[in-house]
Image 1 (cartoon, rainbow, N blue to C red):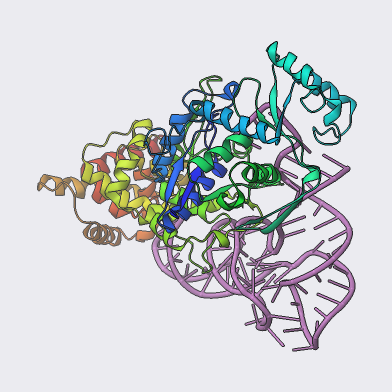
Image 2: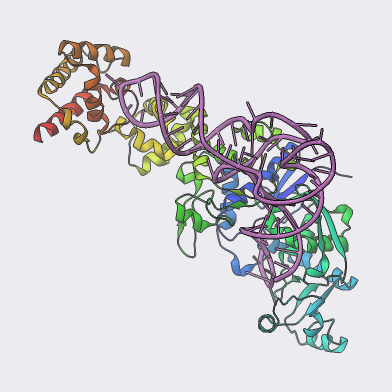
Length: 511
RNA sequence: GGAGCGUUCGACUAAGGGUUAGGUCACCUCCCUUUCACGGAGGUAAUACGGGUUCGAAUCCCGUACGCUCUACCA
């Protein structure tokens, strides 16, 4: 008997992948890899009305960005394909037939309009034992009537026949024993009128055929678990059933309820992993990647939403997560998403990431800001100077643009109140001294030397260096921010420094 | 309405019968820095409520409240 761990993530290709989806993938992936098992991506595209072109590719791109690459999928291949449910239609029909033959399912001829009408008439209507006989199906109708309807090609579905009285008990790896009284579950549709299976049939059949050993999914599936367990019992036997775990939900930061795309738009943070361009509405929804998150950080904070290793450790690489992940330590309760904490994780990962690697990742942001970098080593040096103050890769632009071009505006209002004649004289002297250095053929000097000579000159002019540092900073970067003044001068070199000082002096004299 | 699941600082969480209920984010104060950050040191702040069981309960049991999910020919 093959006991190798096999898990799957089974999204439907209807749009961007949000936080909850990625976390489900992550926990599946971590569990599989922790146990040396395999991770399968299966596309659940059985609802043709909701199919969105490009969504499948988007899901695969997202998984790649996160570093959660499937072992088997529509693009990676594998021995249990096809991995797209729309291509497995015949298989589901076959199993639906088996259920019919065994008497565990029946035909239902009610139209959607019939059902809608019935729901209006009967409060809390359930298509189950209570109302089954009032409907049009192969249990309520005579055998002749059924054959007649079938012969005429009347549209129909196949429904599961839920037993009258039975307790369904199963063990959830996170929640322990969960019990349902089956009389409260209705006769779910298994095969739709278009011949496609619903999720309920497809998930059971595919998990069996793909030899899935552990099935993890969001908590929203818990109420329909009894249907799936019934199907396992009828079709394959409970001993073959995967072990279940229902993951807690990711909640809105404020109030309560499941996190949605709308919350992100309202509160100003991403919900999708990567940018999603909806081909139908033409809307673009921003993703964590494009917002400036590192995949390591994205994965890290997602893992910490509902799981921890029992210690105070919070920063985990993917390999460390694999090594310490334990599904039984996953929480039962939902966790509110906190964007501030997410950004903190990202900042920690930016600090840990090599400057050359960051330089590559920063390129799209530099392009978007129209910043031209002439020398790669220069960029790497600048990254080293400002990375500590960036929560997002995008923060790099406002933190460092002055290294690449003179600031567009100078906050002279912050200089003027304390400006005086002797400062004017000092800065003119400073410009002169730098000009002399340049005449000697020097383009720049080390920060420490720049600082020493600056202080010396200040003393000679009988001004405290501290009174001059802030104005100088503002002249160079435009405002009250940025790394050490002399490190900036060292980087932008003497000629640029002089140009910026002279420009600011002119602005000041105009006021 | 019904069914299921859940509930520790504002947020994420630790502590599976004995702790001044610990850590992180956020917030506040101070230090470092004559900028903004980073870093360092402190501070504010929690066991939903009510009953049991026990020498002892955040932890075990029972109620109550509140919240969430599901209740489609969507997943």
